[in-house]
Image 1: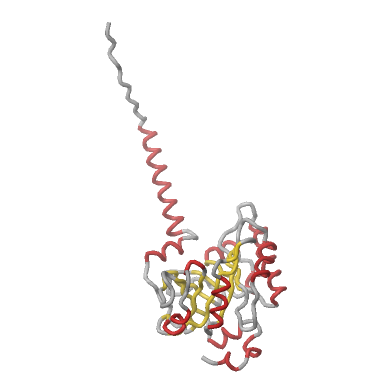
Image 2: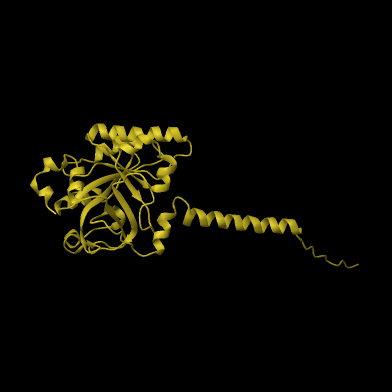
Length: 273
């Protein structure tokens, strides 16, 4: 007696199929918003656009880390121009969290001063260690001198376990600890949506603000600011690959006056343009 094999076919109900389609579309919309529109979108959008040069600003600079590799400092000094103007300042990544020193920091920090650039050092804030630990780690590894820009706190993420108020208190702890050591108010770097969402308390307005905001003709943030990182796809002689371009919102004299010691204590060279 033979048995005829039966093939079983499974059919999803119509409503289940539509739910699946809706879920896929929702995931796509979320992904698109998060990458291209949301708070971190400025870093991704820059990969697909041209360098823009904000009008009305004369003081240009860059920020660098180990991602730029070994820099030809002589070529950068002699041929590095942004919008036909020389580079005046260089922000250099120093530390991250409470355990990491950027592998090129010491070399970059030394060479920037040797080749005549106004230099600054920044710390990338981590969500995995306390603000005090991070501040002390920065202080331990960064020896700022007269003529250097104030220390910079690069803050782009908020720990999920902290409330907004706890996060603000942590940022203030880093700022106060660092200010107490260097005797100068640190600079806060972040992107403008993060500033509005988490650092909008008036207590932060006392600090110089360095804003990251790409693909706009002018900064949309209505508060005061000192620096504007307007693209991360800049190209310069002496640097392989892309580099961030920045402008300073003021004159060269005002930039030098912002440095540790101020222009009055640095000497007549600080007045030179």
